[in-house]
Length: 151
Image (cartoon, rainbow, N blue to C red):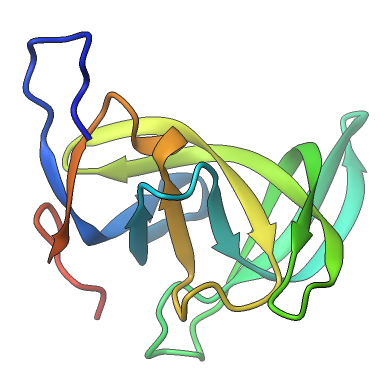
């Protein structure tokens, strides 16, 4: 994805990269870069809503590595809004959206993530075009251009 408003060349990333989520102490989570999807989604489980400093918040768990189901990260974030999501069976559910920081290729930036409690393409994180716009150029035929595959 090229920025038409800038002569600056954007760093190239592949259709799969390993991203860091520093707010959750996750150094590497395999990520699908999907320019056909506007929003980004994180697979989470055991979602628990609560109030934190008068703001709606959520506690949830993440398995950052598909090959290591024993590793589970517990995270907390403010809920910035909720969105209706349709699952594979066509059922609609209300999913929380949080904001956190992402890191890749020496860049760190805020992203919005929809927390989804079901599988998304067998990956744990999908990064949509809103999160990468004006930051990276994407070649979906490549993988791990700016990162190493998760262990």
